[in-house]
Amino acid sequence: MPGTCPAPPVERAKYTFSDIYERWQPTHFSSIGPSGQASYRRAYELSAPLYKRRMADLKTEDYQVIIDELISAGRSRSMCEKQRQLFGQLCQYAMQQDIIDKNYASFLTISVRQKVRDRVFSVDELARIRTYLQDEGGVGRAAQMVLVMVYTGMRVGELTGMPLAQVDLAKRIMVGGEKTEAGRNRSIPIHPQILPIVEDWAKEINGPYLVHTSNGTQLSSRNFRRDFNNLMALCQITGATPHTCRHTAASRMVQAGLDPAAVKSILGHADFSTTMDIYIHTDIDYLLQQLQKLE
Image (cartoon, rainbow, N blue to C red; front, side, top):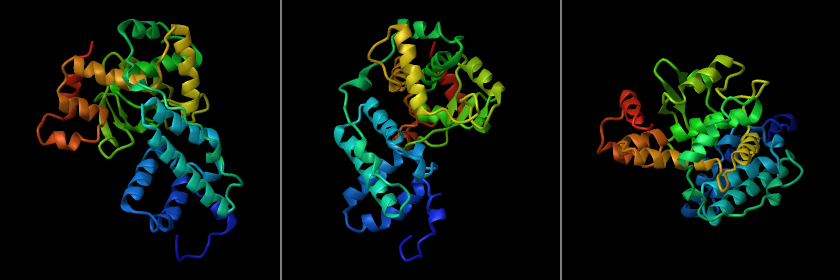
């Protein structure tokens, strides 16, 4: 931090992505205005999957995953550019501290796709995905994850980062989330259609995460994307991305007539606190009852 003695090299090598941001922010923010500061804070919030990872371990592909998720979510090019700019600034700072030897953000690519967020899975496509639920390996797991995200509206990072300890099968809820304040630590009801999947995952108990690798470590977004793409190819589904699951969930909830407050609570939309002033039925029993409207 400013005004303190530099940490020894061994300690600096342990700095996480968040550590670097906290050390970089004060000096950089002193030279930019409120609007610029807000943009960087937003970019930092979108980097949540990297928070606890050591800066020395992060490479271009790790930053690219965040950029690709923004593109899949239909974010603007300017937002993607700001994300790349933040990564570049933090890499530059880490280089100055002899933590890394190159600016990995300089190799990032941005290819914004148009109207990706308008894509939803059809009933027929979901039926095709269901045929692979019992498959062994990554394709079967991807099919299960797709179905869970379609019935919960969870983002990929929210599902892969879900702690097993925060899954209550008796109450049929998961507690987790990311991104906005409204999205973090929200109660996500478990629909009967996906309860068997979640129960099977929980029975494996091979690590702290609900979804994990064979070694018990957290499943990376990159590996899920690989399995997701393989699944889409087998199902002969084109134009879909992992974010299609969340968009499908939101569309199905609205079409099924769920209370707007329930939809915003389940999805963790940022404006849910405003909706709470109007809608009062937001306890977990009510959310479960509302979710039953989905077939």
